[in-house]
Length: 485
Figure 1 (cartoon, one colour):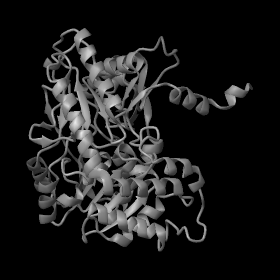
Figure 2 (cartoon, rainbow, N blue to C red):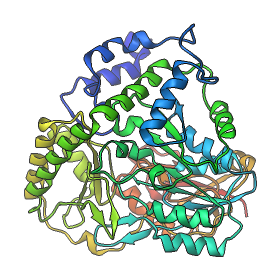
Figure 3 (tube, helix red, strand yellow):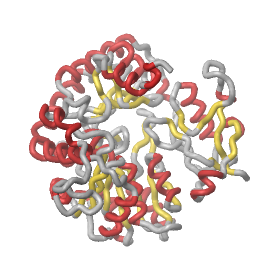
Figure 4 (cartoon, rainbow, N blue to C red):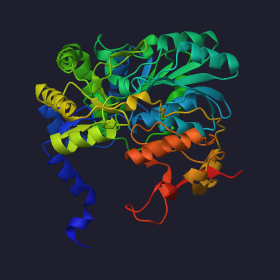
């Protein structure tokens, strides 16, 4: 074996990092720019084990406990737990500690697939609440408070709700109203706030879920703050929560060899944002506002506004819509990366998402502004936005147990799957919002949606192909796992 073949990951990383690219994606430290020189220089030296004086994450009584208490204070939480497996482990810890096997729970249908995995693991049945849809922008928007209240009235036995806010596009659910609705009926409100860790550090952002009454919320620090990938925090917001049970759940789901580098980066991000956040985020948002005004005259590409259908949106998350042009969101993302060296976070059929952070300065934002203006000038007009092409369709869902999920599926052609129940999660990634959930009845609309995504070039997890080569395969060769009838 050649020496180069022994290091495929390292070779790929060196190739990517060697490019003079502009990172409009996570992690929020943007290639280390978000760290001070001394912190970055010492980071590998922090890769230690539980030595004397360094405390133990599973029984924190020293410096780790002190750091988590400082984090809780910064976020106004009753208690905060450091997570080293990303928000996924926090979502699972919330489900494991908040509910019991067999419980029914209200769930945002546009949840991340980590929520679905948690429901399967702990055998909790979802009652999906569908988002609404804005046809002009071809975007799912959060369900209204009345939608959740109606779902609760129709399913009074549910034990609580898990809500995604903000979503991948920065749109925030009506958490304040939801907390009132849930608590009035003695239910828990859990929030997947993975994309909103920075909200606490400037009054120009939407309020945090904890400040609006959520009982628990999980945040991915690494997405928008200067922290290492997998850095996340689970916040407890009320005494309705059994804190001892949460601590046990977090410990069960966390490695016994915790990374002090990740913990140090959580502390660094919290401390930096807590002391300098208002000033730094203020500077970032002012610069972004100038960019938004400068691009307001674009006629084919459009910037999704900071408020949509009455819902607040994260003003630091730039979303460019292509529905009025002749190019897709996937096309725009490819053009930006290949021709301009700008790498967005994600794309879908109609939108491209850019994550900005305090590490981004005039160079990055100027480059994004110039490139979007130039592409808008070159693009043709289109009426793709006139079609109602949703990503999410309601299908009756009976979540399978763990065994059936792992072993019970049979593969059939996707084009022949109408009427079957999906045995797996089928999702474009990113954003990781399932088109099909395990146990969900497959409809013609689901198949048509996946057909559109496939032909648009989306990477779809949960579909497999037959024996043909990549260049030869067609949609007819794509297989989906279904539960036997």
